[in-house]
Image 1 (tube, rainbow, N blue to C red):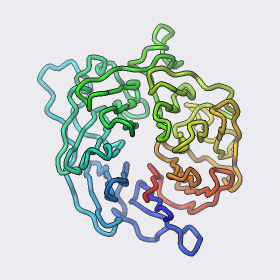
Image 2: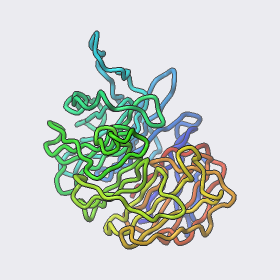
Image 3: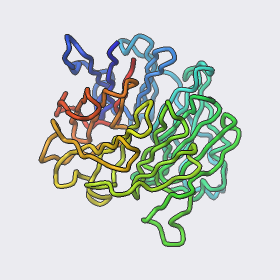
Length: 363
C-alpha cells in the first residue's frame, strides 16, 4: 500500500496521497490557520498525533484514530512549578512540543514527547496523561544547557531502539546526546568525538553543551546513527557512545535535516545550507546531498529542485518511508517536494504552502 505523506505547517496540517499513479496534495487541512509544530503517525495502531503551538493560548495535543478525518483533544505535557530560589534560569513552562515518537511494540500506549525548554515527557495511555521524566530533567548538566535557535534548549530527536524499547537516545539543542537503558530511570551523557567550533577552545569537546541539529537511527542497523550537528556531520557505529566526523561534504556540511535509509546505514541524505549566519542554499541552488557508501563520497542531486532558491529545510523537514525509496522534503518558504527514486529526481507538490515544520510518512 502506498503511504500517506503528512505535512505540519505554520497554518495547519496537510496531507498528500497517490491517486491514479499521481501524487496529489489535499486541498483541505486540519487545524487550518494554526501552527502545527510536530506530528506523529503511530505505526503500532495507526493513530495520528498533532501538536499545536497557539501562542497566547498555549500548546495543545490532538489525536485522530480515523486517518485524520476527525480529531480529539488530549492531554498536554505540563511542567511542575519551579521551586522558589532554584538556580535554573530556564522557564519551567511548556513552549513547544518539538518531537513526538512512539514507544516499542511491547509498550502499547507509550509515547515520548520532547519539548522546549528541554524536558522529556512520557505517556503510557496514548496521550491521556503525561509525566515529566524527572531523571533527565534533574541531571546536574542540564543547568549548562542553552538554546540554539530558540531562547531555551529543546529535545528534537528521540530514537527508540527497536531491539529494546527501554533503550532510548535523545538529542538536545544545545545539551548533547543522552541515553537511557532502563526506560528512563537513569541517563548517561554521550558524545565522545563530537566537536563544537562555536565554543571557547577549552569547551569544544564538552559533551554537555553540544548542538546536535538532528539525530537519526537506522532501524535495520540500530547501532548506526547519523547526526547533523551545528559544526558538521557525525556518525556513530556504537549506539551513540562515540562519534566520528564525516568530512569532504560539498557544497556544505552545515544544515539541519538528515534522513537514513531504514535498512542500510550506508545510505544517507542531507540538505546543506550555506552557513549558520547565512541559512540559505549555497549559490542559491537547493540541493540534496546523498551518500551510498557511508559518507566516503557525496553526490549533490538537484533534478527537479528550484534555482534560484532561498529555502531552508528544518530538522523535521526531510523524511524517508519504510521502503527507502520515497523521500519528502518541505521548506521554510512553503516548498514541498517528493522523490520516488531515493532522491535521483524530485517533483514539486506545492510551492505555496505555509512554512513547513515537519513531514512524516504514514502507512
